[in-house]
Length: 151
Image (cartoon, rainbow, N blue to C red; front, side):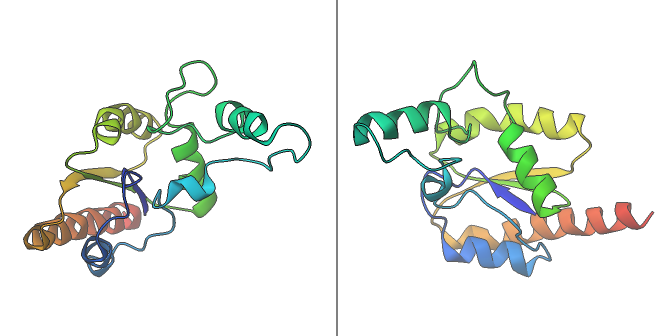
């Protein structure tokens, strides 16, 4: 699975454990996305701030944290994650207060649906009491993928 929507902050370890305990093997994610935002090296010549700015604006991943209507269609970065990692589905797990992730999710779900990639979604908070229902939902999702792939 690819986990999407958690770039606002590092998700609680209990969430990651719950998803993995449900039978979902996480092959990629957007945790600490800032460390992987830039798609290539920043030129060392020239003004460092200017070069960093250009790299972010023109040579970085298109995600909910970056407003970009002209360069890349919604979902291209996520589709690359799914294809290059051999993921069988996407789990949208966003903090309940992360508006960029929650607003982008329906657009990304449409892209995944058009490409026949299974997905499920939920919001979470730091409250560890909610991890059991998340584990059940992710487990049902993982089981459905196994059943449909076997058919």
